[in-house]
Length: 309
Image 1 (cartoon, one colour):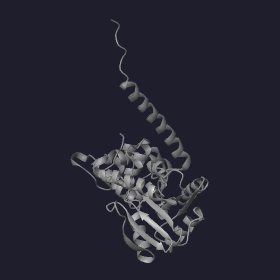
Image 2 (cartoon, helix red, strand yellow):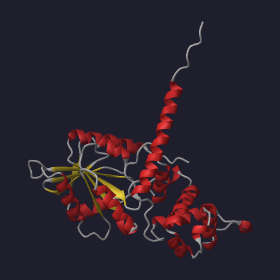
Image 3 (spheres, rainbow, N blue to C red):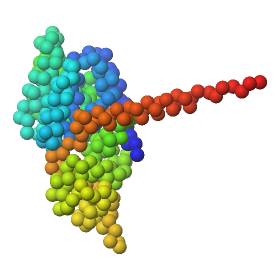
Image 4 (tube, one colour):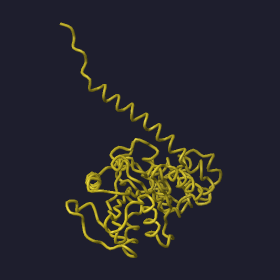
């Protein structure tokens, strides 16, 4: 199943980013989910803001596997014109960390004559609104909506020479990496009406039993999770939690809802659903499939040769 979700307001956000690029921009901040740092990075944003220094904020790092967060920070910090830092609710001064990193990325900007202009973006439900509210409550002042794009962009002033432009959460029109679609759905970034919860739960359990079997066993009081199939594991969880139908059958929909909810609430512990190496493999496979799809569409548009007279 291919998971896709791109409501109309996300197209408005895309247009707003294009307009902001035309108006002038120095640094792009992309807020990522530390539990899926590759899958929550928006390839459309990379296209729209190509050539601009980039700050990757791995948000919710307190919910993610710390060893894997370190791997992802190293991965992003090794990229040209890119900085990466981790954030969570316990970071006492997020504005200071954010501004310091941005100033390092654009050292020639600053001062009232050349204020630093920064765009902050992220997928839905990645915690951007919480971060913005924290910045506004402690350091930032809302100065009003930008002319012409009042419904999609907000301008904040963190310091006299530091302007932060906030845009609504945005995904991309076609998720070509199937693994990313499932992980985005599990994290809550995709609307519930766009995916089958049972299928997402099975994909999630398939990854967890391979990489976090001990945490699943501890949460649901099960044995030998790694030796179970995905559906067997979902049924076992349903029985443990009393998600039953008549005749001793497990209510798989209810069991799936339990698994997805408890993952989102971090009740299974600190989990990261991908490593940089895994995501690179999935991305390469997705690109190959996408290339085949485009080639097939291109061939289908070619008119057949005319028959000879």
